[in-house]
Length: 358
Image (cartoon, rainbow, N blue to C red; front, top):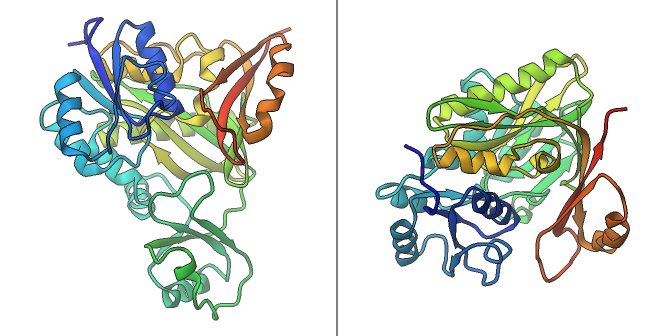
């Protein structure tokens, strides 16, 4: 049964993704309560109410459950125990299992490989000796990452053509936390797919976007991606398979490496709306944000059809100085996140340039 207009949807996390989810929910007639420890967060500026508390605060979780008809989240590092606590009294989508898998890179890759989706080769690493042995496996090169909590290039170190000895202090420098060494992948391009699954099991998949990252941060997403039709179909099929295997309700983002022969290696998945899906705001009738709200509210999924080619670019730090010039352009949609302070590496907004057919 779908939620009636006027019902309240709870969102854990008050960043820009929560803000855009709240805006989409309002258009469909829903109220929003946000659980976020930072006051006056971007999502709270457009929500009906904010609970200012830690994500795992028992009283706040009880308040959120008592207020909401359904609860979702805007980032994948929500404490699994908090999601499980909420799920005992109120529906939580995507499920806690999706969080648990996405929060650990080793668990995530084992899950993907287990359902037939290939990834880069990898080795768990807990100390410098294990790092030395893992590098031998990958001929002295690889990407060393924290298994948990990394995002936007944080918690990563690229190792190229290194000697397989002399790594004393490397794991300490990475924080003495569980790590993963992934093999370097000779990829031609990076793409991502945004897909949604409804309460009834229906699935809708948006077209793959071609992504460019700099310093670990997504800079742009371009539609259409310069890939073969069969590669696009394989990426969409993989995203659908992930949704079904997780029993997921809501939107997920899946990132892939595209190899020279068109084959795909999954890089990571995010059980939430995704930065590389922002283009859907301007190029589709139903955005990824509305699609997610439709899914968790039990409404029919919208069409993922793309009506325009486009390029989405993030506004990061001092890119905010470009805003007046951007607003003078035709066929451009600007979205700012309401963040008071601009600083290097911080996502302040994005814009989408439409490419109209001639």
